[in-house]
Image (cartoon, rainbow, N blue to C red):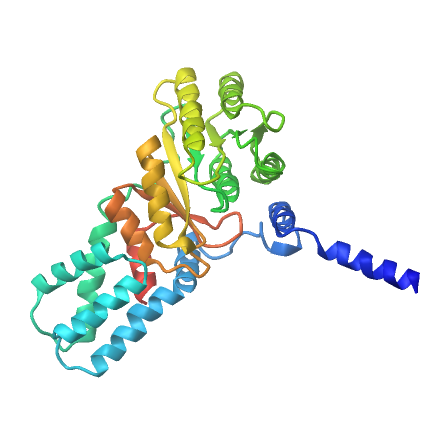
Length: 351
């Protein structure tokens, strides 16, 4: 009897592993290419453009249903575009995370372009054109023919948005184009952050510069800059701590890292990349505003568009903040961080 009770206690003990520990192990396993993502590093046989469009369409299924199915249903009940119909379309835009203010702007612009139409396809065409105008002028694709050497990218964002995985995938993009990449493990306080980054760096063919846990994050960035000069590196990617965007100490820490980088190399960092989680909707916008005000963000990477995200947040971020959206994450494979292409994004939303 005592033996059975002991066995039950053992089982309960095993179940008591925290969710945080499980998440850490899962992330390590994915980075290693383990069973949690068996096809993690398998390259796609299709062209990158075809893969991008097909996966983006899958990821935006929730938004696409709103634009394709629901607008079609609205027109099946009405032959003309009247005030009631426009109000329904307005509601659909808001529920897709476009945001109230941006939706009002879009609807006002559409109202100026036509008075009445019974053609759903024409209406959607005008809507697509208007949405594209909100994101296209700001777009600037990443340049892999680097002029600066080393080209320094400082990556920021709150915990849980996918900074570590984004850094690994970004490093892989540069190494695959023949660049020598160093990664600074400046997130020195989060449990297992350095180890996870080392794994990603190894998979990407990059070198990870690290210190012991809980050391000054800026000192890691400093040493990485020195190593980059000594080793003639092409690219330096600096990881940073997350926590929450309202944490004053975090922002001061990030400002210090940025200053140290610029002291070692004038005009650096050349890119200050903010990583946002698309599934957080309007909260992603508040994060972007906080980081941009403190650090002057130059580009955004939007992750998890393959999940339950509603793609309207892309429109809101680009138009409200006037910051180029450079990358979108559409999966967990190493080549699933894709350059953002406005035309294909809008097509994926509707088609």
